Length: 278
Figure 1: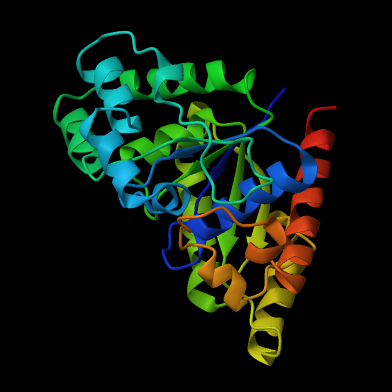
Figure 2: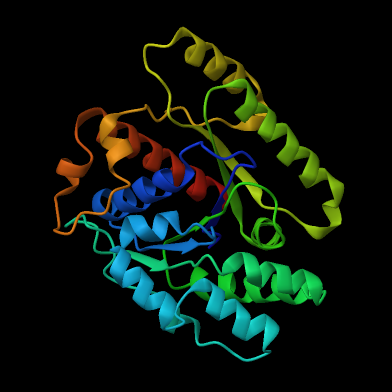
């Protein structure tokens, strides 16, 4: 089954990592899915949303991040036992016990620099493809949290994953970022590229006429395949990024409209995956 999804926009500030978190926790709590998050952002934002800072730092010191896995495979030409890098029991939501994580580290930028310097881009892509090949059969859904921009690692994910979701704020700059990504996709079609699962409008101000107009324009472009449900800007979703030291219920973390929106988005995501796999 094709179930690996890169979550990426060339522009930052679109709420990407918080959205990845909410998708994973909702898919786990409300749809009983086993979800793996691969944190491919050097800022390790989603890792810090799923783990305490102390636990993340310990894993980084112990060499148990995506950086260490890729360094072994690509730079040292050593087989890496990928399950060792998967952290279970992440998330502070009681019902989201089936969220798993391969955490990140700021050393990721140094790894990418070394890959470029030693001209091992092909080897990097092979390593990424092999990892995805392993996890496809182990998890219901795999979400790769990619950083803004088009780094060598992000390009590898975009060419090896099955699908792409593009979070976007309903504004002109974010919309233009989609055009940049589309141009990049067209540069080397022979190299392959993720299938567009859809553009997901995020951080929408519910009472803003400007946001509503941008949403209309984005939705009218059939190539975007916009999700029917936009994710509203709510205080609950903004605060979801703060890891809680004690577990809380899903309803506490995602109350009211936040839960309704995420449930609708996840249902549509699953429906689109099912349709794409028939």
